[in-house]
Length: 223
Image 1 (cartoon, rainbow, N blue to C red):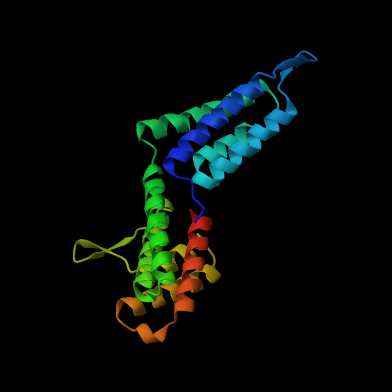
Image 2 (cartoon, helix red, strand yellow):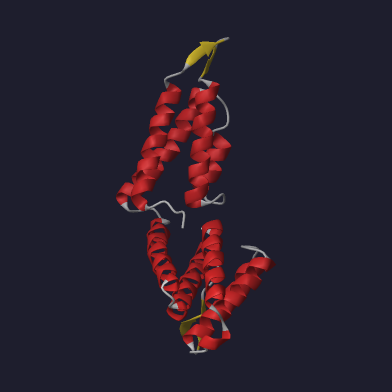
C-alpha cells in the first residue's frame, strides 16, 4: 500500500521548504519588477501541490490556499507558499495537526493490511477477510468524520455506532464517492460478514484476494 509515513511527511516538508529557498535565491529584477526563475518556481509549485494533495486532499484548506495563492513567478507568492509549508511543519512538530490522527491510523491500516495479505498468502482466507473488512469499516468512519457525517445514531438517549452499510449509503449520498464504489463496498462488507459468522464455504480465497486489492485501492484514492 503506497502511503507516506509520518516521518516521511516531515522530511518531505523540509525538502519543499528548501526548494522554496532555492526558488527565492533565483530572484532577479526585470522591467522594474521582481521575478524568480520560472523553471524552479514550476518545480516548487508542482511538487508542493502533489504533496499536499496526497497527504491532505484537494478539499483541505492547505491545498486550496496554496493552489490559489502560489500561482505566479514572483517572490511574494513563493514566500506565501513557503509560509504555508512552514505552518504545516510547525503543526506536525507540535502535534496539533488534525490529520495526524488519520495519518497515524494510515500506518496502522498499512500494518493490518500487510498482515491480512500475509495470512491470505499462507492460506488463511477467513481471518484475512475479517481483518480487511475491519480496516474498511474504520476507514468509512474516518471519511464520515472528515465530511461531517455523523457515524452514530441516538438509541434511547445513548449514541450507538451506525452500521457500516449505513455509513456506506450516507457517504455515497453525500457524493464522497460514487455508486460503483458503494456497490463494491457493499460486496466487501458482505464477504467480511460471512467470514465473521463462519460461512466459510460461501466465498473463495480468490475473492478475498480481489477484496484486498479493491479495499487497498479504495483507501488510497479516498485518503
